[in-house]
Length: 432
Image 1 (cartoon, rainbow, N blue to C red):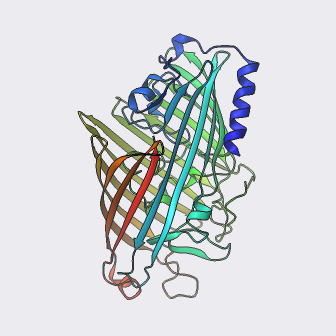
Image 2 (image 1 turned 180 degrees about the vertical axis):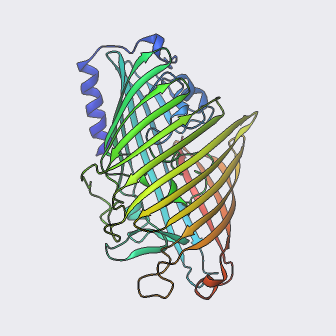
Image 3 (image 1 turned 135 degrees about the vertical axis):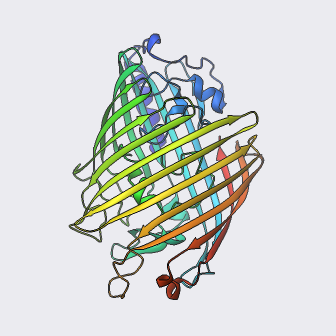
């Protein structure tokens, strides 16, 4: 339904305007009407927010290294540049080595459509993204030891489980306009969107997207990637981007199919610097009003820093991300999360990856438990590999596995067991 709506809007705008983005303000776009999947096509197409290659753009308005591989299939028409992408990942996970573990079978999914075209002196972009997680993962998410955040039924906090994504992941539009040599101003607005807070979301950055597990640091770094109501404004000055957002800071509720429009009562600021084509660093701060439905009256000030390095290889690539986030509850205590993840691709056939995290967890026990509201430092190391097995239904079929080690304080051993291990196997179909 969303794809049909975006296509209809794009067609109407195509008829309504014959204006062209000035050629001196864009990178040379592809001129063929054939489909392209890969870095070369993405690099040759104009970006939505400024005068740089499209591969610099990650989730929302976030930047990644410009040398990153393209994550969309591109098509150039007379007036519109179209980008599509999708994946479905079937997973079997087992955390029964822990006393609080579980095993489950589920599937993650995402489908994306983006369209952009010159309008007057600027560039208009339309974005849509959906997920079938509410059906394929389920209301109570999937087992993920030591994960916390959100609720399954509106009354009980999800603990040791990762919540599903909402059906609507993004319904947004952008408009940018050059304001000088290598400089532009832009606005981003969405019924569902991502404010200027944190790094590129974990399922969209190459260093983490192969791993089907969400990071334990998700709610310290990039949990606002699905916000119901976002308005962002910013400027691009060559390799620097400065932006500010007003947004609805509440986490999505247990109804995963609706659009939860509310006041834009939260705000954020982000500065991003891409000194070379292989580097991207961001520093951001956000003030979130009552983000958790089960913690009324508690706001969170979130600070994040991250840097990503992407190295193109003769066959394949290597990307690494380092990130740190701090949540300061108002009122309440501060908690920190650290993340180091890396993925090495050998010529688009085999990818090996790892993720190390150290996170302060203060929601592992429900009210009434003696350990309720206590904070515990949990550390996790996961390693995995994925192998492509060829094309299927217009996309790439791959399979892989992940094993995780957990290191926890002695106080948690009666509840979880001593340093439990977890594992999962997965099969993925992805386009491009």
